[in-house]
Length: 109
Picture: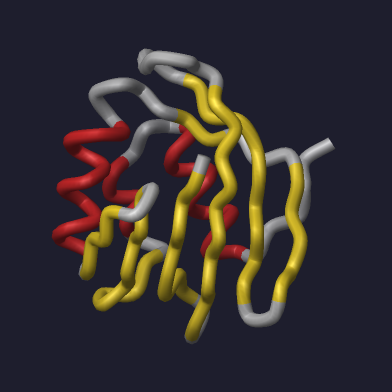
C-alpha cells in the first residue's frame, strides 16, 4: 500500500521514479536547500546540477516505505536502488515544507 505524502514530496518522489529532472526540481522553492550526506546545494540551479551529476547517471530511484512527522519536518525513509555500489541502500529524507513547496531536504544513509 502506498504511503500518504504531502503533495510536494509525493510530486518529487513520482518524478524521481520517472528520472524526470524537471519534475524533480518543480516541487522545490527557488531558494531551497538540499543537503546530500553533508554536502550543501543552495537554489534550484545547484540542486539540478546535483541531480544531473549524481542521480540520473546512476538511475537512483527512492522508494519510500515509512513517513513520520517531527516538529516542522516530514521524515521519509526507504530504499533507493540504481546502478551504484551497495544498491539498494536505505535512506532517510528529512523534508521541511514552506508555502506548498520543499524548502529544505536533507538526505542521509
